[in-house]
Length: 392
Image 1 (cartoon, rainbow, N blue to C red):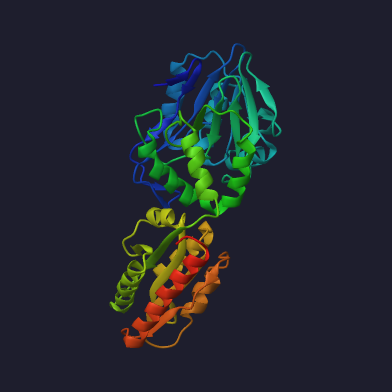
Image 2 (image 1 turned 90 degrees about the horizontal axis):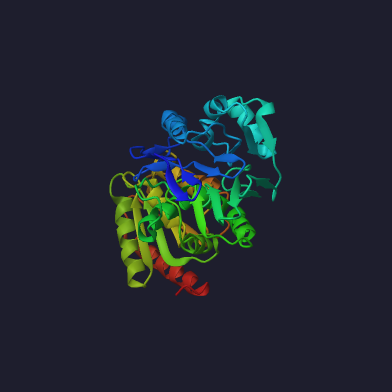
C-alpha cells in the first residue's frame, strides 16, 4: 500500500525482501527496495521513477489504489531497469502523461525500453516544473553512477529525491532510516556502486550544498528524515582521508601463502596497524569492497597457478581496479614453484591504481627464514609509510 511521507507525497516503492544478487554480481544480504514516489500538486501529479520489472504488478496496483484519474508527469531520474523497468506499462496506463528527463536519459530509454520519442518532455539542469502548489527542480548529477543520472528537488517541502545517490540495498519495513541500522548497508552500497566515481560524487555533493534539504528520499533503501547523517558519511567516504588499516585479500592452495599471510598479520598487529584479512574462496565481495573505502594499504596474497596468479587473485585485482579505492599503498605476497608472470599480471590489471607499490614478497615453495624476515621488513615499510602520511 502507498505510504504517506508528507501531505500529498507518497512512497509507492516495492521492497524486495528475498533478492540476494544484483546485476548477477553484487550480493544483497539484506535484500533491497525499488523506490518510486508520487507527488500531488494542486494542478498536476507527478510520479518519480518506477520499479524493477519483476515488481510491475505491485507498482501498478499501488497506482490504482490511489484512484488517479490521470497522471501528468513521470520523472525518470535514471535509465537503469531497476528504476525504469515499468515505464512502458505506466505510460500505457496513463496515455496523456509526459516522460520527463534529460536528453541522455531519453536516448538510453529509447534504446533500452523502446519508448517513442513523442512521449518525452526534455528538461535542462536547474529547470523547474510546476505542479501548482508544488515545484520540482531538476539537478543533474552525472556519473552517480551513470552519465544521465539526475535528482529531483521538491522546493516547498525541501525533499531531495536523490535516485541512486545516498541509496542502500536494504529491505526494511521502516519508511525512515534508523541511522545505526542503515549505516553499513549504505556504506556497502557506496563501496560496490559509487566508489569508482568518487571524484564525480564529490563534485555533485558540492553541487547540492546550496539546497536546503530536510529529507532525502533515495531510490533504494529507507528515507533519511535527518539527512545530515548520510551527507556527512558521504563526505568522509569521498575524501582523500585513509585509515591506519591494511586489507589482505588472499587465497592459498597448499598452505604456503596462508602461512605468510598469518605471519604478516601478526607483524602488522605488533606495529599497531589495523588488519582486515579476506580469504577469497569464502569472502563476500561486498565486505571486501567496504573495507577498501578507508584502508591506506592493500596487500594481495596468492600462489601462482601454472604461469600466473591464482584466478581468485586475478578477479580481486580486477575488482580493485574497477572500484578505484583511495588506498595510498599496495603490495603483493605470494608463493610459486617455478617461473612465471605472477607480479607482471597483477600490476598490469591494476592500471587505475595511482598509489605507491611497495616491494613484494615472493617465496619459492614453503616460506623460509629469509621470507619471514622479508615480511618483517614489509611490515616496517608499511608502518613507515603510514607515519609519513600522518595516520599514525
